[in-house]
Length: 189
Image (cartoon, rainbow, N blue to C red; front, top):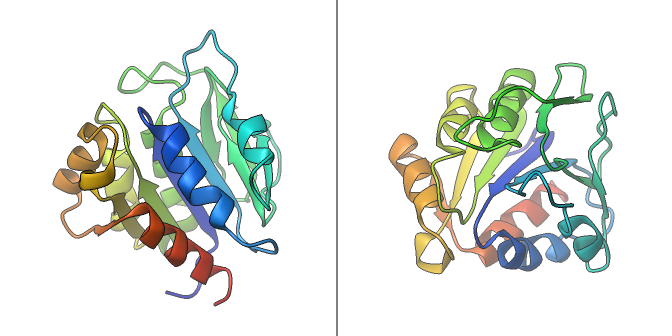
């Protein structure tokens, strides 16, 4: 699928291991921006940013309000903020009410990205122990984007992949290795 301009990823319980298997595989020079929401308790810093920055060939950072998206950068939602993407390719942070008991919410990111990027969006739902992301992934599909769900057989927690597949039965189910290969191929298309 050519024409992809943005990748959004959501994960919860088991996210550290899943993201460590996925993001460091992406090649230097990867041209697309990647937005990631991981459920982090509001009273904790997101330790994933420094951990992944040390292991990835791409820049890994916490998203900032009104920041323009740049290719080859992995942006993480800050703790206790929803992350949204605007139609003009900038990021927005929000302290609106939690969605599915979560702020940041995967649904909020995916729905805003689907509105802004439509068919040029790829959404990936990975391991997690709640239903956040299912409605967002459905919005990605309805906007013409590509939906990918981590294979439940290797997910640390299966509630999120199961809910995503129930909402999006046509989503592609892939192992982390297959997701990494697919995303890497987008950088060479």
